[in-house]
Figure (cartoon, helix red, strand yellow):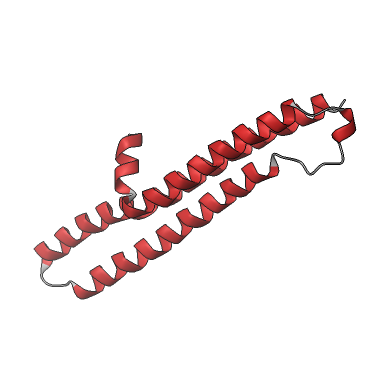
Length: 131
């Protein structure tokens, strides 16, 4: 199922994979920085906020893919038309198209969820380290 979702994302999969990689790197960097914290370094900027920023950016890219995909789908439907058999074929095409259109949004929201969970875990690590 996850592979079908990834394949149906089409070209929007590439920036989403890049964002996922950046998010993994930000999580790793934040974990390393948090591990080196001591009580005197509480004035530093929280190292884990970048994780949340990458998650939010993933949703924005997913939404952009969805909006562009919906526009392309609507343009394709507008140009087609005809008798009943063609309309039924068009509806089947619409259902397949909606699956493709919603995939970037689903992947973006999944990345946001992962970043939120990681951010909360890293925030917990920061608060425990600075006690």
